[in-house]
Structures are given as C-alpha cells and as structure tokens.
Image 1: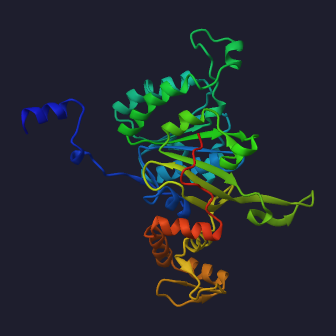
Image 2 (image 1 turned 90 degrees about the vertical axis):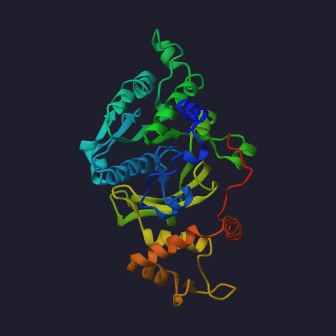
Image 3 (image 1 turned 90 degrees about the horizontal axis):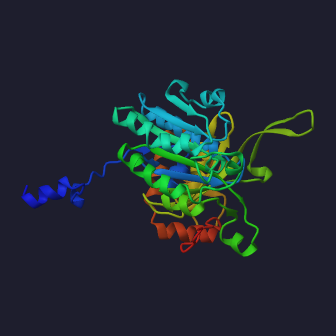
Length: 362
C-alpha cells in the first residue's frame, strides 16, 4: 500500500470498496413485517423508531424483537430502558424471552439513560460485553429538565426533549453502529387536530423531527379497531362481552435506510403469545401484490400460486399454505422478487396502499 493510501486508512477513512457490507438480520415471526422493512428483517446496528397511538402494540412488538435477538444470539444480552415503569417479567418470559439475559433499567431520568448509554455502557462494550439489543420505552415518558445541574420540581415539570435529544442522539448513533446493536425507540403520539394535516399524518409525534432524522426505520404502528380485526375468546364474560385476546396490527414504513420505503405490513398480534395466524398473513401479503391471484381475469373464487394447481376458496388456499413450510417459504421468496412498481400498482387497484411517495411526515 502506498504512503498516501496508508495515511487515508489511518485517518478514520476507507475506500468505499473496502467497507464491510456484511449485515446481521433480525427476523420477526411476521412475514409481512420482514417484507416491509426489507432484507428479510431488521438489520443489526440500526435504529427503529416505532410510534403510534396507545395500545396499538408498539411495546409488544418491541419486546418480540428483543426476544428474537436473544434467540439469534444465545450468549447475547438485551437492555431495556423502562421509562414507563411498566415492564412485566412474567409476560416477557411467557412470550419466549430469557430473563437471565435481559437487563432492565427503570428510570425516566435522561441522565440515567443517555449519559449511562454513552458512558458506563460504552465502557462495558469496549470490555467485550455482548450487548445485542436495546429498547427505550418510551421517549415521551422521559423527563427533560431544562438544566440538569440543579434539578427542581419546577424544572422537571417544564421542558421537552427538543433541546436535549439532538445532541444525545448524535452520540448514541456511532455506538449503535460500531457494536452492531439493534435499537428500538418507542414513542407515544397524540391525535392530529388539524384536518388538513390529518390527511397526511393522523398523529402528532413529540420530537418527531429529531427521531425521524435519527431513525433507520420509522414505523407507524396502528391497531385495526373493527370487530373483524379483533380476536376474542369466543365466550361472553360477566359483562356479556367477549374478552379480547389479540388484534390485527397495521405497520407503515415511513422511512427505511436499508431497503425500499413506503411498504406496509398487516399481522395478528396475540397478547400472550405474540404474532400468530402466519399462513393467513402470508396469503394476505401475497394476494395484495398479486403473487397469489385468480387464474382468470375478472376475479372468482379460485386462487393460484406459481405453477401449482389452482385451489377453490380462500380458506382452502390458506389451509394449503399452512400445511407445507416449503410452500410458505416459496411464497415469501416470490414476494421479495416482485418489482416495486408492480407493488404500487396492485396496492392502488386494491385500495390498500395508503403511503404517498412524496409524503413528508415531519
């Protein structure tokens, strides 16, 4: 290597061809979410901001992500900053998580979160601590005093993250990148009152500009409220109503630095077991982008995938998918090969694509 090339490499620079492009993928049990974020799942060392209304499923999806990270790295640890003081260890364990490899730090003090993150935690990472995932739940629950040198009740009640977040997020990103830590930031929202703005984005996101700028994935998570999208026990309780045990979730990818943005996911979220009804989800995804379709134009009740024989009826098609893991993987793989222009055309025709290419949620 020449002298000038050596100096470039020694000066924290690299030729583009020498940049390591190998990535670790964290896949969730949701085929449509893995498809929506691209690459078959989340890329390690990236930051996902999950925002949406209360009870949509953000924290549950975040916990499922940590659990999948634990499964991928049997010796790896995850860290949860529980700013809402709501962590339930029995629930995490029931979902399949390993409590012995989850560190929980319950605080809403930004010093105990961010200063710890790029202080003591960074030192642990430098010493070889195998931390693979971090989740902060939620950003809105953090108390942002105007002056941390002299904390008072008045200061704690006032101030937001607008002046605090930009500088600390800039410090966090290099740590996340360098050590390949997948990071989830949960943010609560409020309803947009301005009807014109509501047509672009139905929610007001506190500190949304800073979070969006930091995010590699900016995901809007919503609960589908209709009865058809609610899972119940099927039995009426003392009040005469059926107890809800799950619901369908819609995720819109508003920003994606690793793959095509503006995709969507739709899956069933069970409160005590996680993501379910995978075969139905695969069918809905494949049908929405014409990977599974009617063999004849004009619709009908018959469905076909690839060169396989046609099957009459949606339920029969889902049952066929459910019986064969190989078929499931073939359909999912076929979804990844569909051209994005075809996806958009199919989405507009079916009325399921709600994202606009030039949409700006900031």
